Image (tube, rainbow, N blue to C red; front, side):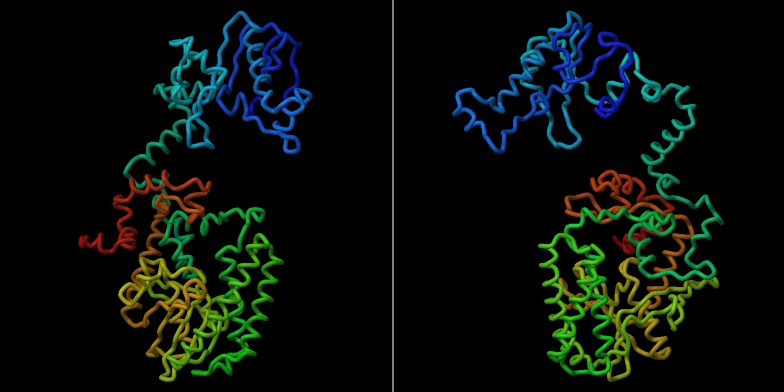
Length: 521
């Protein structure tokens, strides 16, 4: 269809060569051969659509003075019969059995079905494009000739550089080995040191390391190749979770920063405090509207009301939290290791004289009456993915690294080497102000350093395998790098299953399932 739509100048004169167009073009023309394509029900004849201003029921009342929309089906039938009658030579009719945009098969047109029954054995079914190409007597172009030769195993085709690379990639991806086509960049050797997180002068955010633990392929494409996900503002229907989180963080940072001095332990928030919170929330919402990230007006009005309501609930929960824990706030958005921050990077020793420098911002640091510190990281999403987090599993296979880092930054800024620190994720909104966390002690620090070391070793070792989400129906794309077209991850998941047991992936498997690698399950 795309080829036929391409504009071309007429070559020669009418009556010579090839005439391509609707079946009506054949009326009154003598042709040597005729091919009619697309004879599927719903395509030809097309589904008749009535006139929205004057329906067929109204037209029928005029006794034929106006044509009915259903009459177009008869026009199509006459045009088809005229095209088939325009030649005494061969006539070939075809219809597509499937459509990439449909999950059901198409059926032959009502005009074609009687003919198919009449000709019997002359009707031929072509299972697929590749099946037909492998058996066609004369491929129409060089590319299809090469594809036919490749299917047949012809050596001249395999000798073509582009074909050889394609065959190599296809065979490698179908194998159980972890190859360069699956993200194994270990053969690059020393050149991988250029992207190492521990190279001189480098500082990395904990969320970047979490990205590798979740999907090394996504880390490689996003953080090393710097390929960003395409933004389509016209497709924004509702405030995205990342923009919602940014908005709530801005409001809480500004509010708690303003009233920090009078927000002591056990002191409830006043009505003036609540009014100020609302004022900051509306100002942040206005800035989000200016950025064009709020989506459709009706949905945004609802989201805005929800955000203000959730912030109100946060004030009530915060009063209860300060009373129970006897805590007062020392800092909000505690920055370390970034431009303009007074605090240096957090240093994580990895052994062999290697030190990883980590930068970031801790949302909030509190001090309790006993002198211990509490670090809080606000989250606006669901807490479901965090329920297993605790002292026994403080980093969830490397996908939750922020709390140990923020705890070290808070201890360096407001305490000493032995100062006790507790760290929590505070789920504002959908999480009903739930706190999930643990006390950051020597055991947590050891587990954190071990996992971070495995992540850095994986990056330096060139392990960038794709770990896609399991296939299944979902209304959104979880990993745009594993599912760039939004059509699902079934193929990527099959590739991941093929590569899972590769020896090169043993350290990464240990992150995903420590018990399995230890032989316990």
